[in-house]
Image (cartoon, rainbow, N blue to C red; front, side):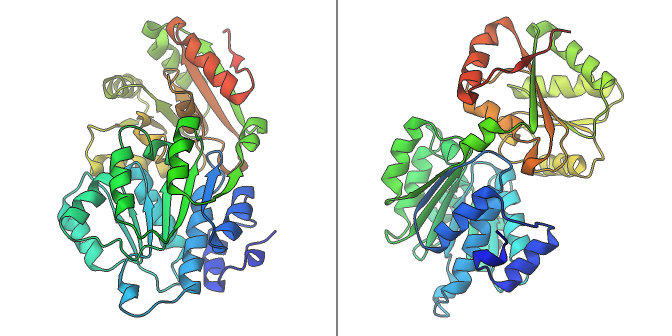
Length: 373
């Protein structure tokens, strides 16, 4: 199938071709027609499968297809909620890229910077708004955001958006939306407890489950080293010195460990940055930009980055710990091997973490290769 066969506007196709996308991914091929048909949709698909383009292309086409009166055109017609600032910015960049030849206004709002900047964004009357929940609720409370005309509502990384920490915020936002709307949920993992909440939001949704592609995929080589906590940094430094790599993304459990690991790597004259919740937004964005441009080869992050980094060519993901939430592992390793390219995911497992590893292997339906060196 081609993008032409998906019945997309020629200006959208022109923008897609400029991104050098040749054919739709499996997820795009299934999701775009379902969205254009007006169905509610829940999609569970592995990271790097083209989820953002799937809903972005379809939403742009839907808004073009359904013109509205001039007054209504000044209101938000599509709302996309994302769990992190990085992911909101990334989604906004995707909409801007695919909609560059269209007269559709895009806005992005998120925490971490002064609300005044986002008030300016809303005063430009975006047709499509990408937001993190906390900042959006703040702007709604101050009367700057009107969601009464939203036609398409998207929850990206729905499992994260519907967890205990953010569920109440999402419910408050949903209560501001019109009842007659299209709902779309995307995520790489969808635990059973989250699915119960999903069905309270969606109406007779079409289901697309592409998890099997991930389980069968061989493009990410997974390895595990059994090593105690006190020896993990030494092993990491040894691996970084001994391997040829273009870019390495390292995940740590805590902010303190992220800073400690980055410092140890920098001492070895390997230029490295750390990003986590204690870094301000401009620092985080600058570090990600340096990593994207290959000006630094190593980036150390807490899970704040697991769902917000879409960078091609990450050669290695290294987990300094085995996540106690098995779905987190899937999101982490999905930063490499994107869009069918090859990648390597290396994990360090202490004796206390072996049970977490077992659960991850059960989730994937396969064992992870043990490196005994």
